[in-house]
Image (cartoon, rainbow, N blue to C red; front, top):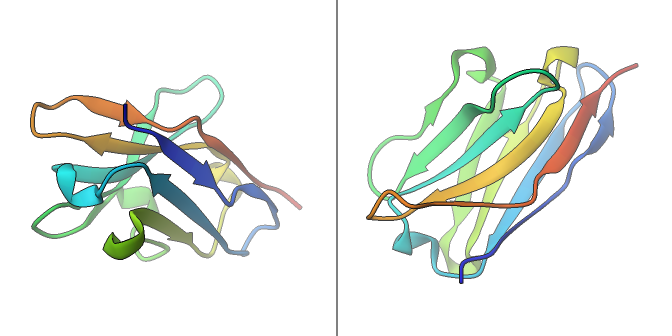
Length: 116
């Protein structure tokens, strides 16, 4: 059973920063891709950033230059560093792991609210 546990969400003012963490119960190299998604109220879940096992990281156009996905292989943790946050970044953020059989695993989500 794979478990993904997110942390680091909260309330932040516009222009501020947050770092989300995703602790994975298995080596992250067991997965083809690690990623972060988000879902705002009334909207579909969308990809924010992806980190393939091998290859380049990729980002949604809306967050390029502001968000950075990274990983700590030794500690089975994936991070999302978010800077210059905007109110439209407000959403529940989910960690995702996709394995070689294209099976997706999800965390429980962490709320990020950007508001003054």
